[in-house]
Each structure stands twice: as structure tokens, then as C-alpha cells.
Image (cartoon, rainbow, N blue to C red; front, side):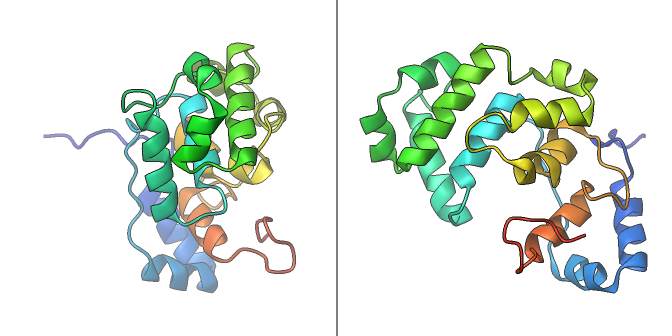
Length: 188
């Protein structure tokens, strides 16, 4: 019997072992955290992944999950498609718990997805990292942290390499050890 194929283009166990062996600070953090798990079915497109990312920005995970659940409820329990997001009234989104800035960001994401600025997953996989980052950070509310420090690239594009800034274990530890002198910046 063969084990299921890894959703990543690298061996997560080997990457974790490498990081643990080469960085004492990461080793402590990796040991203290739960093993990384991901359900790739939850977000099937860059649009959906980024929409959820916007909802989770700057608030607790529990609060964000509740708010994002309310946003999905406005679209029969599913993540609203870009056309639907543009039609949702600001008052309904505010009542769901989104801030004005997040509403503007989500609507900009929806419009730029329709306009082709935000690529499909297939298109994104064929783009250089630089071109992808350039296109995605043009969306209001999507910055380099969202795209470049691992959440998007490692999870949805499977581009992470062991020991790189975008590897999943490195992202987990970097998120937990954010640079206090430069908030929002990854530690190098």
C-alpha cells in the first residue's frame, strides 16, 4: 500500500528536521507547536484564499472564523464568488462584522479577480514569484506578508523549499517570532 502523495513539492518532515537542526530558536518553536496540517480543499482558488486572508487580518482566529462564517452565510454558506461579493451590500457585510477597510479590500479583490489581475490557480502556478507578488499586492489589503512570507505561496502554490523563508515550518515560526522592531516584517 502506498501513502498518499504530499500536497507540497518538498518533504515536510525533512524540511522540519532541517530547520530544527540548523536553527535553535526555530527548533524550540517547532517542538512547542502542533504539527502543521492543511486541508487543501478548503480554499480552491487564489481568490478564495485571499478573501479569507483578508477576513483574518489583525483579529483573533476565533473572531475571524465567526465573521467569515457570517460572510459565507450571505452566499448560502459558500465563499461568495467575485460577482456575488460585488453585489453584497456594505450594510450586510458590516452587520456580518467586517470593518469598512476589509469590505473595500474584499470588493477590490473581487473586481481584480474578474478583471484578471488575480490569476486562477493554474495561471498562478505558471507565473514567476516576482510577477505573482506584483499582481497580488496590487489588491487593496494584500501585502507582501500575505503573499511572500508563506501563507499564499507555501499553501496554495506549493513552491516552498526546505529552509526558505516560504517554507511552512519557517512561516509558522516567523509568524510567531515577528520582528518587534519592524511590525509586519518577517525576521531574516
